[in-house]
Length: 210
Image 1 (cartoon, rainbow, N blue to C red):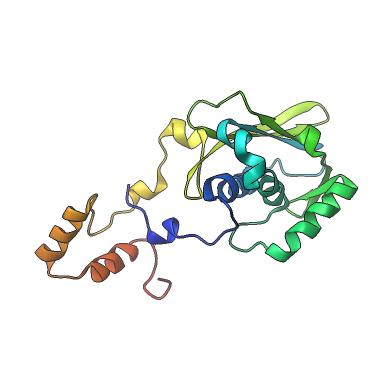
Image 2 (cartoon, rainbow, N blue to C red; image 1 turned 60 degrees about the vertical axis):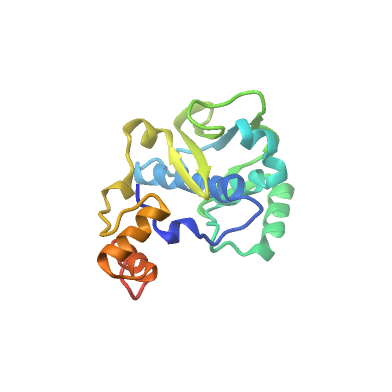
């Protein structure tokens, strides 16, 4: 599957792309999926529960996974979150025990009840597993599993099961898997590595955007 350089080199908060950037994106994606399905409404949501598994549960606190999940549920994204405001946001949440989902719907939030670390359990497809669950009163209305697969990339379990790989549909002019293949393509087409990379990137976005 071809990967754009803009997917590899990301702007985001640390200390870990897999334990911080990925979980923040997954938390926000869960709520956006609810919104897409017409489920994101104050009359539908009493609270959100997040369950962390495997490596995310074992080392998550040290890597800021809990903070990343909270920020993602608030609607923050890694490349735009105001770092100097994070502590203030978390302190307000701690004092009020309330959170505004996507900065729109206020729900109760107590980390002890709503952010669970399952240190001895692992989900099926990857050690960095997360399960997000939305409840109305005590009834679960929507759930989704995500995996933070490294480099800030995330995959939902639905995407994994369906084999959905959106980038696989992008056709790049110069496809290679090794440095030897890369150099061979350059020599064959009489172009530099930089020229080849530019042409590949143009399959994803315009040259002005690049």
